[in-house]
Every structure is written in structure tokens, then in C-alpha cells.
Amino acid sequence: MNQGSDPTQSLIDENTSLKALITVLVAHCVILEEEHSKVLKENEKIILEYEEYRVRHPIRVGVKHGKAYELKELRDDEKSGAADIDQYSKSPKKIGAQQGHKRQVREKCENFDREIDVYVNQCPHCGSSNLSGIQEERVRFIDDILPQSPITTRYSIKRRYCPYCKKIVEGVVTDALPHARIGLNTMLIVVWMKVGLRLTVSAIPQVLKKMCGLILSEGEVSNICDLIAEALGPYYEELLEEVRNAEARYMDETSWIEQGDRIWMWAFVAKGVTLYKIAHSRGHEVPLEVLGSNPSGVDIHDRFGAYNVLAQKTGNRPQQLCWFHLLGDTKELAQFCGEEGKQIHTSMKAIFLKAKCFDHMAKVADVEQLINEINLALNREFTSMKCKKFARKILKQSDKLFTFTTNPEVEGTNNRAERAVRPYVVLRKISGGTKSPRGTRNIEVLASAIQTCKLNGSDLVEKGRDLIMTSSH
Image (cartoon, rainbow, N blue to C red; front, side, top):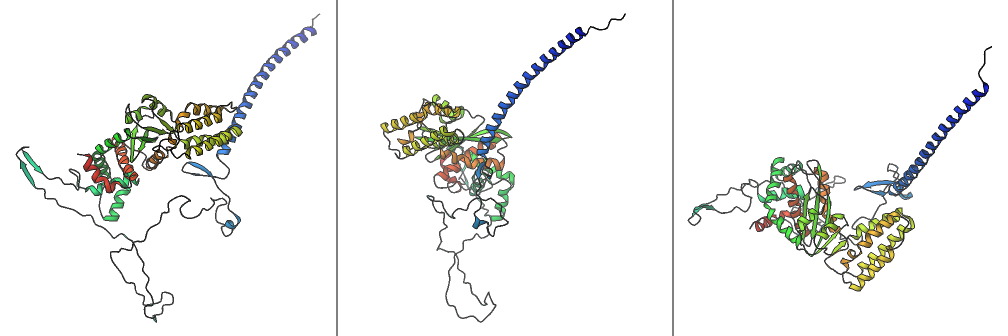
């Protein structure tokens, strides 16, 4: 008799298998719950990032100079008769200078070089020749540029023997650099176009040919920049000494490109001086090399870490932090950190306005009061980590916030340095930077000379000859 399988044993085996399966499923469920929790956290993080992005980039947004701005919707009266205009546009502003800005008006010149009488013998409207005698006269002045031609000068240089030096000597031609075939005035104009006006190397020969018939090659433009930069080398060293000895200097840095690699352009602006230094480092070593180990005066900067190290390396001299950057940070806190951020922004803005009212004539007690107000505004428990970090940093540097209130040579922002680097950010984007260390050296020397002249109300074309002649002796 065949014995069948034991049903009880089958049930036990099946129960065991089910228990094992349940164990596997439970473990799998635990893993899924952990992954689900992780996804929820990532989702919360993405939502927060999206909300921050949405605040920074409104739905109606444009981009100008790399910064976003919100576009205003057209008013009803603007939309009428403007069906072909985009739905959104910037709201129109009043034509002319803004309030508080100097008007830019071209003055009429009453002096003239030639006079032309303009007669009318036929009516321009109906063509009639039956006109009366002259009833009145209207005067109009027109400024124009007549076609020019380059001037070639032949110098007959007389040479004589000097018995003391025992050699032949000759007079100096001051209208050109040694061995140059292009006059100094033209060379300064080329440099002004290239570095001052930021024209391309290919555009400059076209402008000169069209304006005055002078033919230059692109290679000659680069060579002219080399020669003028070399001639202005001693003047650059003079500017360096003036920056070191200045009572106050404004400092900033921006990126530069050399042979496709990113390096750094540093700007130092003092009273009547603008100096540029292009280096491969963004660390404190660069300003330390420029200023030396024992400079004088106050440093004004944007709280970049290299300047703090510089201060430590040079005797912890007086500093002034840029309030423009500081209030920019608090404005961001007001956007993203709720009521705490708004409170910080409001308090810091009010303190800065109060500090400005002293007009550089504050006393020690006034500065102490301002620092106490900083402590009251920031020395508290914040729930936002961004607010905590900001408050901690500013409280450590509160002694560097109000130097400008007592020193008339110091401003509360480093806008001077910001304005100094802006033209060469544009130049970098136009030219793509420089192709060699020599080209980089040319830029820092020529830019320093051009911006220093501009700071003193002149330009390199006007002052370049004197700078070369006086600095070389």
C-alpha cells in the first residue's frame, strides 16, 4: 500500500515558506520606507530651492548686465496703438538726467572757422520762383570733421663729437619713441582706442584709415601697445609708490583671461591714482606684494577673505568694510529669511543712514554708540542659519564698519574700486583677455595710466607725452 504525503507536514512547510516570504517582504518594506523618507526630504529641499529661485527670477523677468530685473506691464494708454509691441516692457522714464545727476548738454559754440551764405531761389514746397526779397536771416552752427591726411616729417638729425664722452652725439626727437616710425601722438591715440575705448585690434586700423588715411596693420597696433607700455613702465612704478603711501585706498578684484586660463585683475584706487595688478592668485599675496609689508592708510574693501589676511600681515591697520555689499547681503536675508531677515535689513540700513549723517565728523562716543546699535540689532538668537552666520561675521568686524564716520578721506563703500574694474570686465568680454604674459603686463600698465589720467580730468592722448618724458628722467 502506497503511503501518500503527510498533509500536516505539507502545511508546516508551506507555513515556513510563507513566514520566510513575509520576512523578506517586511525587510523590503522597511527599505522602501527609508527610500520614501529620503525622497520626501529631497523633495522638501527642491521645493525650498525652487521657492528661492522663484523669488530671484520672477515670471516677468529680463536680464541686463547679468542681473535679473522685473518687467512692468504696459498701461492701457500705452497698449493703444502698440499692437506690435511685446506684452511686457519696462515702464518709460523721463528723458534726461536723473534727479541729482549732472545734465549732459552740448554747449553752442559761437566761434567758427568759415562762413557760408545759404540762399533760396525756389520754394521747396510748391516749386515757385516768385519769391520776395530777404525778409530775415537765421543763423545755424554746425560742427564737423573734415577729411584728414597723415603728416610725414623728415628729420635731419645733426650729429657732433663730444671730446668728454669720446663719441658722436645727437639731439633727441621728442615726437616719437626711439626707432619708431609712427609718431608719439598717433601711438597714444592707438593705445587710447585699444585699452581706453576697448576697440578691437582689427577695428583700430579701419578707424584710422577712414578718419585720417593712416594705414596700420593689426601687428603694428600690438607693437605700439608694447612700446608705450614699456615707455610708461617707470610711471607705473611711481603710481605703485603713491598707492602704498596713500591715506586711503579702495580695493577690488575681478577675473581676467590669459591664454585661455582664468587669472585675476586687482584694482587699487587712491586719491588721484588708479593702479591695476594682474596675477595668477586671488590670495592675500597679491595686495601684499603691491602694498608692501608696512603700508600706511586705510584699506576699503568688500569683506573678501584675502583682505582680512592682508590686514593681519600688515599690522592690523584701520579697515573700512563696504556698506553697499553689506546692505546687499541684508537685502537678500530680507528676501529669504522671513521676519528675521527683514528686521536685520531695516536695522542695518537705518544705522548706515545715521552714520552717513555725521559727514566724517563723528566723535569717539558717536562711533561707540553706532557699534552698540549694531550689537543690539545682531547679538540675539536667530532661528535662521543664514541670519546667524551673517550676524556672527559682522559682530566680529564691527570695529571696521565706521572708520568713514571720522576720516574724511574714507567713504563708506568701495564703489571707486568697483567702478575701476568695470571697464576691464567689458574689455575682457570683448577681447577674450590676453594671449601672453607680456600682453597682460601691457594691460596693467596702460590701464593704470589711462584711468589715472581720467581720474584727474585728462586723458592719455593729452598727458601721455609728459608722463613718458618726466617719468623716464
